[in-house]
Length: 144
Image 1: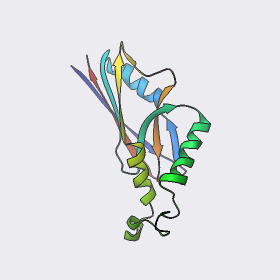
Image 2: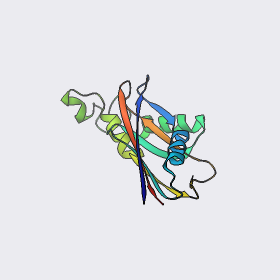
Image 3: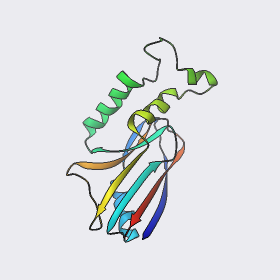
Image 4: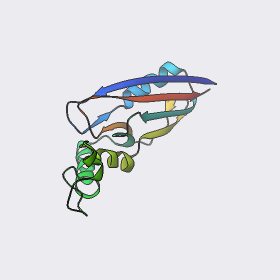
């Protein structure tokens, strides 16, 4: 069985960004030589995510709006009307931690005939929820 591991560092200029990483994942898959197996892509930070969805800018904005409006707004916790308890520790990224839990930190993608076995509109994304500093993603491909 073959195994291929690669790391990538992201340094975003904005606090929140959605970055299309499918081309990088495909490039690493080609380097691996794996024809049949699995590809794991995982954020190595608790305030970032990796997910699969459509590569459409309107949807990306919808995701950001959904997280901000209903699930994990930056300003205050809607039920309490005050800040997140985590932020009382001196941090200011309680919302980013909740966004990681909501969106998820990793994906596993089947590899078939040397290609990512994704649906017609599926792409891989890195979601940054507390950026402006370096963070890493690990990619591990295993198979024959």
